[in-house]
Amino acid sequence: MLAVVGWSGSGKTTLLEFLVSRLSARGLRVNIVKHSHHDIELEPPHKDSARLRMAGAAEVMIASPYRYAILRELRGEGEPPLAEQLARLAPADLTLVEGYKWEPLPKLEVFRPGLGRPPLYVSDPLVVAVASDAPPATPAPGPAWLDLNTPADVLTWLTEWMKIQAKVSGNQAVNGG
Image (cartoon, rainbow, N blue to C red; front, side, top):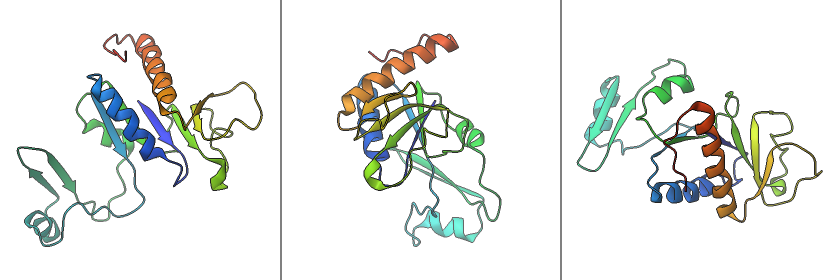
């Protein structure tokens, strides 16, 4: 599991699209958990599933031959912790978590100095790599520094990182090659 973190507009989703497409083309199963601070509307309000959810259903599953989705109304409950959300997912070779900066997970930071926001890696020791469109301000030991404009380099780093994690955990199923 790896969190991909960074400020809004830094390019997290664009990078994730690239990584997921290449990893899945290699036969790896990749899950994504995307955090949003906004309300999520996945269906038009006039559709049957939305009408049933708004009528009071706790959960509504929409199922078809192509995909399914479960919508759960929190109705004032607190946001479930990430661990609870992860438990709902099917097993995968890699789970990428977009957002959840505060979680104690290894992180890949997407950092663009041009946004005028401070880097996260300076205060978060769990940032294991930074993908940036600029070189580091001070070359010093710390997270790996990757060229955001060369996503294939980020993919190479991620593949190697996955292999190391698989060895550490004893899971030899990762075939990121």
